[in-house]
Amino acid sequence: MIADLHIHSIFSDGSLSVEDIVFYAKRMGLDAIAITDHDTMAGVRPAAEAGKKAGLRVIPGAEITTRDSGTGRPVHLLCYYPARPDILGKFLDVTLKNRTAQKRAMIRKVRKLYPVTAEHIERYSRRSQSIYESHIMQALADLGYTNAAIGPLMDRLLSSKGTCYVPSKYPDVSEALDKIREAGGVAVMAHPGQFDSIGLLERLAREGRIQGAEYNHPRNTPDARSEIVRIANRYGLPDRGNGFSRPVFENAQPHRHLHLPRVGPGTADAARGKTINPRERLRR
Image 1 (cartoon, rainbow, N blue to C red):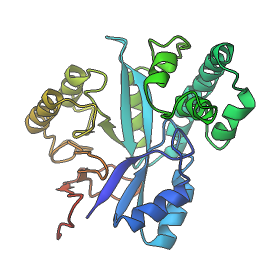
Image 2: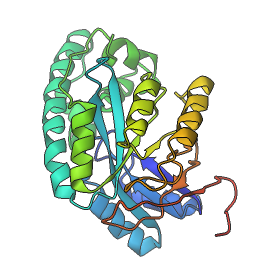
Image 3: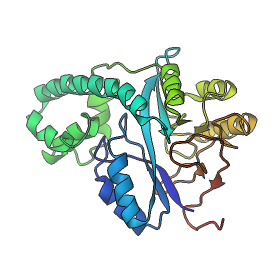
Image 4: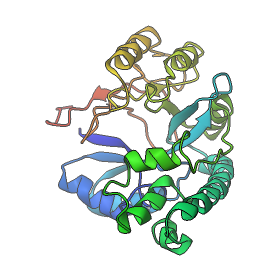
């Protein structure tokens, strides 16, 4: 089975509709995908409908933006198969509201430096559940100020150290994990190396609060990947409720190396995953 379990669509900061994502997933020979938009599950239902027509398995999910209160650093969590998506949705709506207010404040700063209009930016954000950095940068790219929407100019303007950055409020990682558990979902830490969260990953794995971690992400350094494997081997959680037998999602571009959980919709029961090779199908 070949799968990509970390995909963003136009419902957050992606550039493709879920219908286009399903189309290209089938064209690339994928057997399954997960729609994991930032802080929303709005794309899951239409993706599932498109997947049913195309014969593609669509796994419900979301990427949840949180903060580690101990370090102040961001932590992104992937939630899969929430049995009660309504519980998760209400929780995520607060983040979406805060993000929209934050980005509008950032847009006001950007407009002092560039002749871009709010209406131009909204052409990109109008189908999204909030406003994201990519929407601002796509408008600036249209005006010729950059040829890479996600690149150095975005870092200079919109990163946490950028000249137009405005802080926002995000839930604590522990609160988000509690909500994932309440919703009956599977919790996975996204790209732990990006925000230097290896220590946090180990603590959460030791406590049995996390069931997986993204491994082969471009922003996971070789050292971070080694640590993720070590943690996965040490805290396999094979018999602890919501755990995978080996809680590592091996995630690489352009397709994703993953331990795909063998769980069905609405359940987060323990599951044993098989490594998915992006180059060849594995016989099950």
